[in-house]
Length: 479
Image (cartoon, rainbow, N blue to C red; front, top):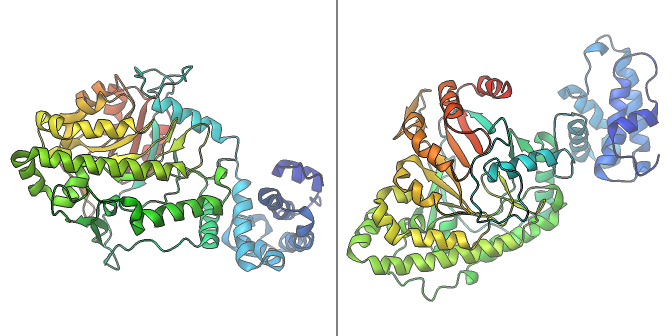
């Protein structure tokens, strides 16, 4: 068989494995050779396995329930894996069957090597540009008024569930050196089973850690989440601090380098780093009350600390980003979006504690400096900080995500917290005059209708949770 053959359809034609009767033989044999194409491995290694699969297929044809046999069923996956185990071993045989069957599903894009991914990358590019086609040349700081580039927003929804407790509460330790083989196996199995996309978003690979460790905080992992313990001693405590000397910096970068080298990096979307932003790092170090008191009693001292925090975020973010493979001239952020430039994500949750004037004086300059260090930065915000939306919208290159806060309670009831979608649409419509916007929350049909009526679909991204994801997806698919 010519080594240039690369499609399951071509394999089927060249094999002529159908025997004119029965149900399962052809479908069972084709994966045996398709998986060689998937793996880019020599075809002669599958000879004995293919023969055994053909025999297995004939056995299934003779079985009284042959018409119910499908290779994707759990039972037949195990049957397929058995003959492959003689060539590759049991574990690898099961993985290869899963991988091949996934490839044979025409609705699933396994990884970035699939040419079909180009359409989704184009959609993400239009999302970033607020629906506009790609300009020539593209300038990261450009402002994009809304356009009708796509009829639907980017969309993905999860089933609502209360936050689960942490089974083993602990203090976060520096990550162990990466086991390359185990990492590669985990990544390949995950993409074999689930593919590249989750709805309209990419399944990204993260290699970072809780960012507060880079300014000296200890991280508690418990109650289904994690948080930083205060570590503040003095506004100048970071003056002689070199983040490159820390085990956290060294281990994260070394593990990132190993992760990229362990797989075919051009096939997988590695995510740029995610950080707490300047106001959140300061709050992690000091605590909210102490930070607010410093904003009044010693604003210059607080600004000095914020400047060093910003230096550290930029230093770590750039060093991490240099290790990541690009894709179509861009990179992926931690919110699963492809962006057309060097990116990073940061949060500004603590901004809700300040008035617009106070925030503009103390914190906004550091947000701006952080954004200037990257081409396509992306910020995570909360609706409770809507008094600052206008200021952040004016940072040209900054992509925005807003969380509409809610709590899904253990008794299965959703509890809104703060302003909700109907209260926020004026602010969101204003943002959309200048840039795209991602919205996260607990979604209902009514919320989707309101957003659809008030802001253009192209340049809008919707994600979050709901009690019946399939019903909302059906509404989305009908658009």
